[in-house]
Image (cartoon, rainbow, N blue to C red; front, side):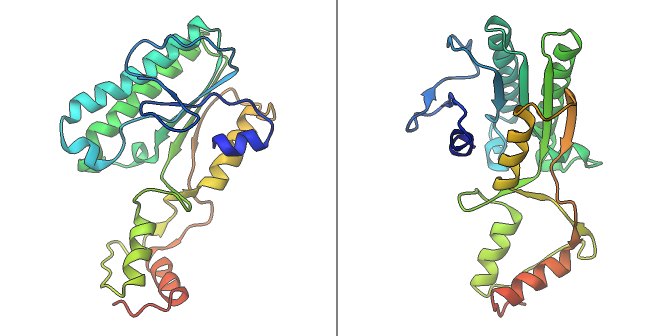
Length: 220
């Protein structure tokens, strides 16, 4: 995202909790003392992996909410009125997936807090992106990536709900374009929740067989 926005001639201040090249190192769970003139906050940071929540899940959930509150306090102090928040598409499931229950609730609490700040006119623009798996060359573990890996190794593939329609992914390039659209001034809706899923889903079994054929896999 940073690379994409810089190519679009935006000035980007990037920060993360761990030291990375060209990134500021900031612990978002504590008061943020950075002083910069900023127009938009794009809040990506969170504990979100299932393995992250295997230990001390309630602590991780509290940290997620703390990050949101600290970034919002930072926005108030620096008169930043535009906020994009990375949430999760899992909020739309009923019931919640058991392994993600506490994580999802941390995102719900963050969403409610930000929308309330918008209603109090502390924000002029709040865009909540409910994200599924984000795919692309450098993506982390996700269903598609694991499926392709197993097909390439000709391993047995097990799927459930094979006749369900699958749309639970977004490509990083499409996500970058969406964020660019939101911050470019073309977007007219200043308070919106966006489900970032595929617009043309196909049946899960068709997805698997198409990939199997493309990869010339011998998997069962």
